Length: 343
Image 1 (cartoon, rainbow, N blue to C red):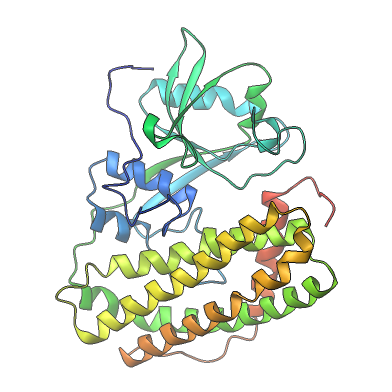
Image 2 (cartoon, rainbow, N blue to C red):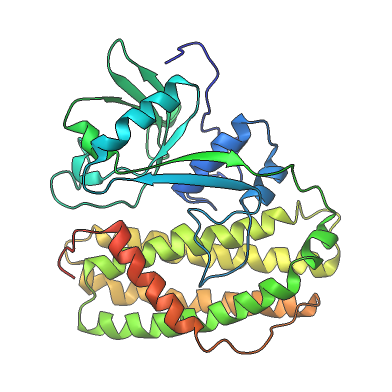
């Protein structure tokens, strides 16, 4: 670790939409990627466009699908210690490394020794070989300490490095005028959002049926990952990629406003699910929480209408979208929670 060298940091004042908490707009993965891009010199508007991508609730993966940057991952789900040499080499070279730790092996974590969850990301920014300490930025850490945690790299701790990644920009910043920027993607994104909203409605109907019989912990957690980790940031980034509201044309401003409203609905559902997970009897709470999906679906319809009014075309129906979304949901269940806890 180069103790005096500049490293990425979590700075709420310079970050995109970080108000009361880090999950205001972005997920933990994106906060890590954002910190690296800011460290590389990109201002907030360029970061928003670099992190933006297709407005696709079905097909887009918010861990890897970006317009202007790339995250390259390495996984070793059977033994995270195999990734440790790579992590330390990168840190020694001044390259931050994103870590999605296996929380089963994370000291002091609520799931330590209980479940192999991979639903959180931190950014490793320093390595001190003298005392064997890795410094990471964590959205859940103490703001007064710069959101830093320090992990002593014991043999047991090495097992948590099951999923790691490095971040690189893939091109120069996109500096197009907001109207031109939106026009260049409007037809594609209107069609993707329209198909995705219909598929989400079907998924919510299915989960409502499961909740009536007792929704298990894995699908409930997978839903918060999908809604809070993927859908909310897509909507948030789409709005912020259009720029600040001042000076926008009425049509572009309407799209921006509708996207931000829909992202707020997604945030409310996702954070309510997280709170429900920790209740004494989560299955008894989930039906009430899932009711928050209806305002979200209505907000997505309003966003689609704003995009159509701005000139976007919905395109033909996509009958396979529902099946693709359900398959994606199953992959989230297996990837975030791979050991097959009781459902």
